[in-house]
Image (tube, rainbow over all chains, first blue to last red; front, side, top):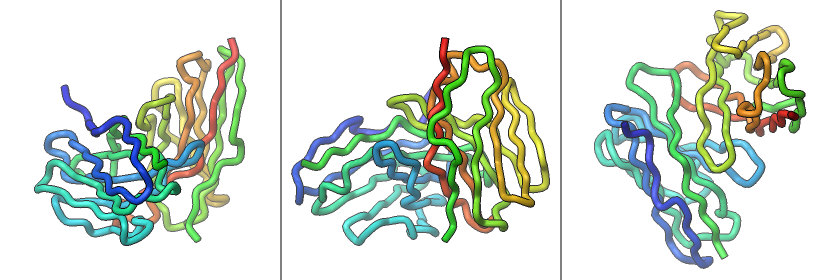
Length: 114
Length: 113
């Protein structure tokens, strides 16, 4: 019974390095979302995929952030030249093709930039 | 700008009492709202949702109330249990043409034994 999975669960990197975060959505879910959650704060929308297209990238904080998705499956969020302010938990969620409704979240990737 | 905020950052409730968590939203065009529960170290978990054509929706031990006049959303938890301790977020969909959600900062619910 697969839910949304994310890897790695924790990532520690040095400032200036690139990182890739992976999300495996629930099979059959066409919609996929990336959020960022800083410590003690709410979820900040980053990007939304419908299939492998991204109709809304408005939340990406800078051009150092990019995301792609293969078909209706795996998505990767890439952060280039990481900065300390990128430290956060990055959450992925997926939802069914029925439209608005419940988003199923993964456990997140905790990113620490030293 | 568009925002979803919460009135109380931390709420302490005695076990067995009812809890009420509040949320204010700013976009009058928002037509769909969700409450999520997030336990420590986990992703948010769906609790209940409500569309703007409704004022109230009930689930198991939870009720969501929507007051569109004052743009206010609340989550009521009946007979609060220790397992209810978590951070609760409201989220709004500000435009029915997109699937973008705006989340509030969250309220931490502490259940006292």
